[in-house]
Length: 102
Image (tube, rainbow, N blue to C red):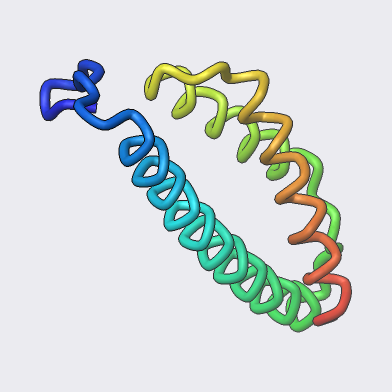
């Protein structure tokens, strides 16, 4: 993409494809690192919940997180339903991490 958000004119389509795939791979690695960080924080939440005698499952909190993700996705020009689907999976990872920690 160009700095103004438009699509760049490709001078060398093969090089552009390779570069774009490398950028996607870089982003994939960053996403995985962020997911690992989120799971680590969920473990800390699990420890805190155990200390406070709170249940791991908090359906109201989970729904609020998913709603917020949908709103942020929409604001970013993404399909909110798709992002909410991803966040339900992230919440599943977080639940398991909290259960392991508690």
